Image (cartoon, rainbow, N blue to C red; front, top):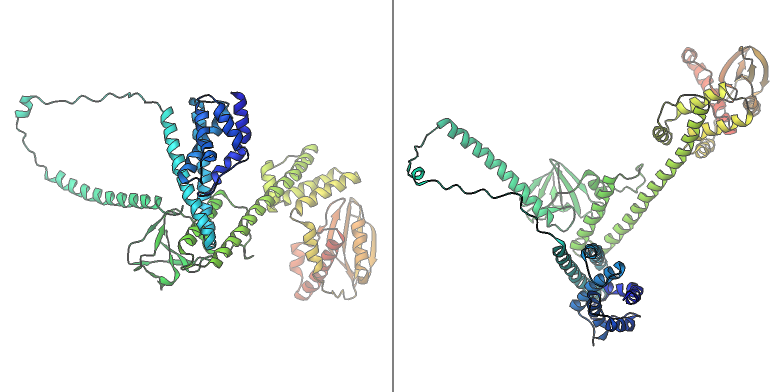
Length: 556
């Protein structure tokens, strides 16, 4: 018997074609004769009986109808389950597997039905006939699978024993029945009961109304659970035109969301005499945004979607498709539908691109964070943040603390050129995580305004550890780049660059061994400048800063 099972298992991929068979057309597979021979040789088992139903399609004259295809599809699912379990008859375990398989096939059929309806929107007349046959067959399959699931579940269910005994009914004695009851009237309690009954009645009506709305929503065509709005008019507080179907708009009132014709709305009132307005019960603000806003227009900075936003996007797709199913050829055109499909395709691609970039940024930041933590611990320094916080801060650009920590290591511990170079690379990778190259290109692509140094010379000074002048060089303003290159190239404990005019020196930037240059102008000095001096000095400061960035010194 195992040989027969193995033979059938090899034929399963071709046998699965029954799920795509079209009523009225001949259904054939390559291994049809093999299956017929195996079926005739097998003993009477459940596997043999189901195979007999399936192979009946090949021995039958003419084309199979919907019922015959449905029976064969059910048999295929049972054959597949038995063969994968290596059994010829069902037991409790394989019945449970059968239920799972029917649920899986049911999901496939539901998707086929949905896609068939969508394809019918843009299909030619001759194509619609085939699509309708597929829909009729799929509906029959769905009903058959559901019936089989119920039958299988009945086979494995167990009757639970009642653990609660019914209370014995107390029958009053004849004497008790004979005693007349004296009515007692309590006026105050009656009033309280009437008020309580009144409010209870109101609460009950609200609960009933809410329940009916929920039940009506469950019967809706889309997952937004839309229900008709029966009043003749609606006063709304906000309205937004649906970008994909401008014939329709979203209307908001007191937290409720409504959907109707744009043309029916005038001056804050929706004319609902045609009963076209729908209330959407299962939607969110994210859904409204997807429905009314073009997120791909380039106006928005988009971030990876949260789970709630993905759910809202799915609802948006579902509801727009349902709208086209109902209104295409009437209020909506095929061109609008194709435009919507194109937009949604790009929206999905954008969603995946954002997620891919987030993953890429995360793992890049993880490697940088590992290196940063490694350096800090290696030099016996305390790390203030957890690793995940460091990663988030690097990605968000909040990394000055980490750059400062590495600067401390450079200033106090590093004397080896190779080690200094590695630390500088790490510092720059943290500081310019989202693209140092791009930033430099943008800055250098902007033409630098010429600066009149007014006869001032550029001065580069070298100081010893005590802060005393040990070396200096003067350059004309025409040799600005040479002066900056000389300044950046000096590997000394302390250095600074500025200008000398009429014997007075003003320093703009200073730096230490292996560290990035920082501004040498204090706030007190800057505030002491008069307006004319401020314009002059700030122009030179900006020119020096731009030149250092272009050459590679990165001032701050």
